[in-house]
Length: 422
Image 1 (cartoon, rainbow, N blue to C red):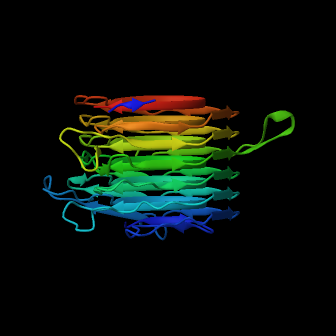
Image 2 (cartoon, one colour; image 1 turned 45 degrees about the horizontal axis):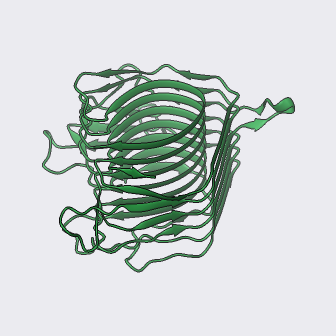
């Protein structure tokens, strides 16, 4: 690759969301999108009834690894609690045997404005259990999460085969996310060495976040026609956890805590063998992020002469990201145990971060991305809270090409990343 330059338990207060799922071939949306979500009540996803009655789910896999994944391509299992969410989501999920796989239109949007504000306390105490051997297929995910305010635009394509160049566009985008309530994720994943991430881009995560503004595009196991162009207008993201007080310090300082309640056993997984697969335990205050990712994806010329690769083109307007955190961020994580991390570009992490502004373009075992027109990028990341991470990790096997494992605690982070793994 060359850079040339569910069954789920969900407690949430959600206003004016616009989910757009599995669009037909001729679906094109050019109208403006305006979303506003404002929550002022406490939200709790917790056990009910007697103390032994868990609020959650259990997934039972095969007694031995099955020929097909227990969670197929794009499948997800999640236990979550959320305050205010403004979301635009597009998902295309196809298999090679599906006759509608070819030439799926990826929609265009006009101006997008999202505003999510949470003032309530958010608590998640649900459980997600695994029995026998559970395998996660391409892009499949299992997660336990709690979040205050989220503004997000997400496009994910699994297994599509586009023979004609696509030209989706997203107009000028403004995302505002503000969290003023405490966020606690005390949920747990149970099961020992039963979950194997064999699919490309498969993920397991336990997380707590205050305010998030995110834009992401992911192609997983796809074939994209050469000369396709993906264009984004100017982007303005602001994520704030808490509020400024007199003199510029913290006035309102909501804590964000991720407490993995299976403290004794920890979180024990099998191998991370899928390319780009990930396992993470994290707590974050304010995050503004933009990401474009190709994973196990091929780009080809149209028509494709032998051995010809024509890059897709990705363009962005001016990007302005601001992340501010005023609360204390704590990741009280049990041991994350993993066999081998042998998938190319696979990762395992335990982290705590105050404020993060990030922009990334990545290609994992994929073809060309040509960086087209690029505006100026301005990132501001400010942290006023204490940040603590007590997580640890045990890896018993080997590492693949570009695989990584990390344990970190960060105050303020501004990051621009271009990554290629072959």
